[in-house]
Amino acid sequence: MQVIPRRATPSGTAPLSLLQQRWWHLCTAYDGDASPIVVIADRITAPLDVPAFTAAVDALADRHDVLRTTFAVGPDGPWQVIAPPGGLATELLDVSGEADPVARARELVAELAGALLDLHGGTLVRSRLIRLGPGDHVWCLAVHHILADGESTMILQREAAALYRGEPLPEPFIGYADFATWQCADTTGDADLAWWADRLRGVPPLALPTDLPRPPAKTLRGAQIDVHVPAPVADALDRFARQRRVTPYMALVTALLVVLARRSGQTDLCVGMPVSGRLLEETERTVGLFANTIALRADLSGDPDLGELLGRVRAASIDALARQAVPFGQVVAAVDPDADRSRTPVFQVTAALHTHTSAGTADPHWRPFAQAAPQILHDLGVDAWREPGGLELTLRYDTGLFTADTAAALAAELVAVLRDLSEGATPAVFAVGAQHG
Image (cartoon, rainbow, N blue to C red):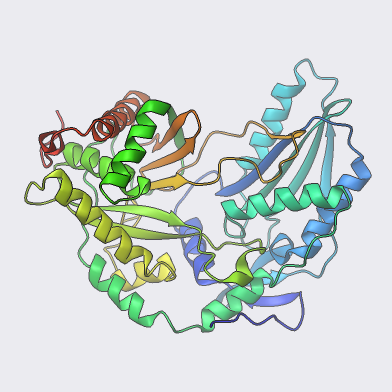
């Protein structure tokens, strides 16, 4: 059984985790006017003791070393620099006198979510409390993605609410710097890394037709299309997946692969699958960057029927998930694709089926607040949430490549294929390899 040891002191320096090394490369290799940032934005509609709340935010920073972390670059590359416990300043803003306080609060949240942060020693965590009126506030916590992931925001939301109420919390098993130090020294994944190198060798880039010329260097400019799949269709899709012995995610990826194949004319396709990366018990209560991405490479050649196509996606998914502990940055280095700053390596499309649908806190007075326009690292990203009322789909797209009309058409085609699946459509519907007209 693997155990992550704690470091002797909660401050000092530590190496970048292998996951952070990838994000460091991405953030320094691609130009952009904003940083990848994970954001908590909650509207608190109850009387708020502001000093007690800011003290709770201070306690969050003292509990989790990533909230006190910056980076320094030396002869051997970047290092984490962890400040000793000392709280986190929360900026207090009062917009209650504005003509439209809610709209102004959205602007202030968007400002944090869309900031360009300096990795070379700059501040990477910002807390802002915005007063809309009596008993009405918005709290925004913005953290550079190199320090935290989506699961971390859930932890922070739950803990902020608990600390504000004065509830005792168990200490995290480890700090993120403990994990980074352990991961850099771990060599147990060498065989899995070799498997990835063999599996992804020669993977072709996705030749999806674009509306605009691909720029020399990838940017983070993005927008999104939101689509609702009604409950009867989503329920039928779940039944279809059970009958075919695949997961709902495998069904979603199969539908996406069909759309990509039809539009690109390719049968060798690769899609990125985000995974939580919290494979060890010690990481469950730790805030940090654990989220990883694995590559699902699918062979759609030979005009497979529906059963065979699902079988190929199922096998590729199981094989990849069994080796998910290998950081994707290591996989990229091992595969060594041709350097092309105009697109992300290995895959240019991601797909995720999110299992959590609620905010990190169950307090009805703490509700999610609107955030800024999306950023996107890849050409396309599909996110799905299974809700009681159906399936919510979001297609994020690079606005430097695709128009809103094309994105809407892609989303509509994906929904149409999912509907066909739910209705048990004949395999002819899934003929692939034809260029989309």
